[in-house]
Image (cartoon, rainbow, N blue to C red; front, side, top):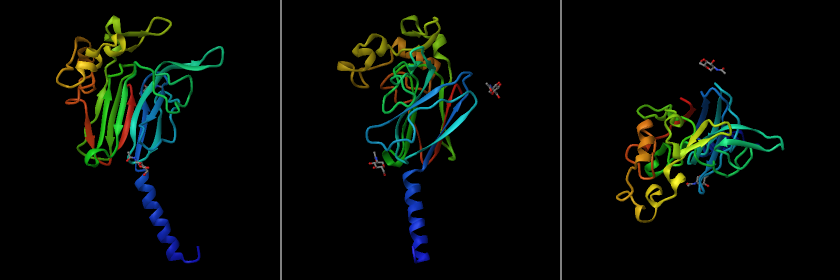
Length: 242
Ligand SMILES: *[C@@H]1O[C@H](CO)[C@@H](O)[C@H](O)[C@H]1NC(C)=O
Ligand SMILES: *[C@@H]1O[C@H](CO)[C@@H](O)[C@H](O)[C@H]1NC(C)=O
């Protein structure tokens, strides 16, 4: 460009635009004593992330840049490997026998970290959810902003999982804990049909197992009061096995 003042202007405007479109970062930290494979699924109207799945070794982090209005969910896949026929799969959270999830969700039971960045009133909404069950403890910590709360499901719910909800690995270890909705599929447990609103869908003996272990996490679909957190303009640390 011939005019240096103009090129400077173009440069700063594009820097501004770039900042506007990509202003949040997610840092993933794996404190589990085993490798996990995070899976990332963007919402239908959200911008996309640069990756939808990767391996994260113990005690390592990975930083992902996100569009400032990103919404979607994240989870950990566990006990992943390649079988004798060369197929990659995971015992929990599998997203279709592939390393990148490519717009596939994780097969429940999975603990979810859910985000809507720049939602109502420009706020970021985030939560940890056991609505699709539990596989791995997860916490979300806003960074770079004062006064915003972390939320965590730190307990290993697999160790207190009722027998009827257990998901086991081939060697008999409990690797996941299903929600009652997933295990039994009834309207009462799924908050559907006549139970499809917050007045009729109440906690159950099963959802209470999750709530007792992880009071900050969603234990059933209408568990909003104690489970949704907000912040403005933060970056987020997602820790597996906090
Ligand atoms: C998010 O931002 C992108 C790029 O600016 C835009 O195309 C998309 O419509 C936005 N999505 C929402 C839900 O606002
Ligand atoms: C991970 O870090 C913890 C705490 O610093 C340490 O005790 C542990 O040995 C580390 N594990 C690995 C596999 O590096």
